[in-house]
Image 1 (tube, helix red, strand yellow):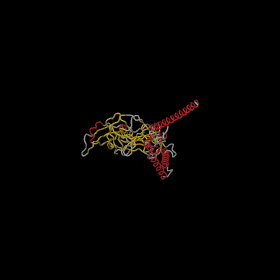
Image 2 (cartoon, helix red, strand yellow; image 1 turned 90 degrees about the horizontal axis):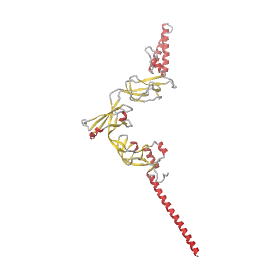
Image 3 (cartoon, helix red, strand yellow; image 1 turned 90 degrees about the vertical axis):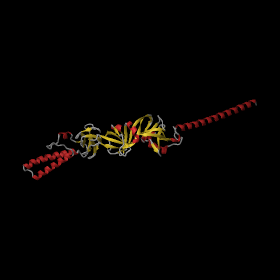
Length: 398
């Protein structure tokens, strides 16, 4: 009996311990699972996270940069106008169809004299042939026929009518040859220079000045009449900004400016155009509350004289500023957001408070921190992705 009771007691005790042990493990497992779930949910940003796989992000042109403090500047945002100095400007066009080649380097901004060779057009390898070479052959043939007719009419071997026909054919051929750029001596012979450039036609500067725009590259095919370059006698343009008299005490701190012409979507910086501050007004004009600030810069690119412009005047420096390209921001109902990259494929939309901008960069006053990775290009694509791939708290797993 004692043995039976001891055995029963032992069995009962063992069974209880096993049950208790299993119950304990189940509870711990349940606890660990709950803890892991919350930890994973926290690490992956919860319902705010946007999933944008790397391959899709790359295809959409998404670029990310690490936010770091830098030196920015105070900005006076105003308007102005591009003004031109007096001088002539000429557009150089292709006198024939052909392939572009440069005998020497031609760059925008370089000085050229009237008649300076800019480039050569060649049609030697075109299916329809070189029009200059064709015109030269026709001219040489007509010239020889005319010279022969002169001898024969004097010997009364051919009629006067046949002579006049040969003469007219020669005149027409000469006009046609010179019309496509053929070069002749006073006696009507093809020049040595033309022989040296046979199979091509030189295009020269029509006036002395500076190359404002070079519109073609080596090897380009151009049609007759296609613009090749712009030669201008205006090497400099002026940017005149109108500044409220409220900023008068800050004008002495101005260093440079950025501007965006109304005719262009590009924001230019005067530092890229060799620009400098010329003057700023000491008083307003009669009936006006604005002071003129004038810069000059190189006349390059497609900047149109007379165009009104949005202007950002760059003033005193701001140290340790957090700045982003304006392309990093998306606007929704008057508020600005950026996208923070959380991991390889995860992003989060973040509300930010902005400060001054200079047309290209904008100061971020709050909402992000140094060291965070921010989308600077393709923010709109991430925004579109958020509409379809903003995930519930736990659908993104690694």
